[in-house]
Image 1: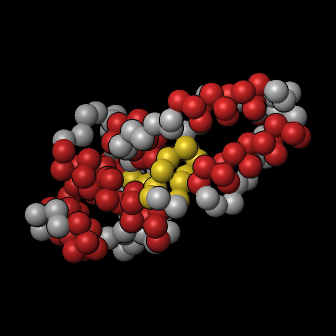
Image 2 (image 1 turned 60 degrees about the horizontal axis):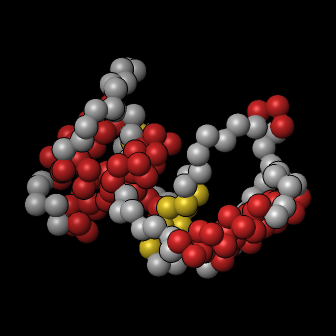
Length: 159
């Protein structure tokens, strides 16, 4: 049976907390997240049945999915985007660092080999992890927006 996707409207605080918890868990473990794990780890103050109902609503809204019937949930691209734009704590980079990065990128030709090396180096420096930057297929290249999401003190995701 195929479900009809609903449009994404405002989420109540409980749904936001559950979506945040699913994303935090999934990013940390890369394992689909079940309702019982959320209740045990996040002290949500509701039963796992209530969490399952909210997970189903988030899935109908297109923010979560699951790889197969008995699996836990994983965030969709829309779920990550919603998290970045709506739920994520905004931790702005200091203005001095922003200016330095803008200056560095202003010195190189856009989308050149040097630009991609600089992008990878900047990502690695900011996240204290490996950074990767590759060109898209020229005919399909179209980037609307890029966000660097801090997962914790040592982990970030490029969305």
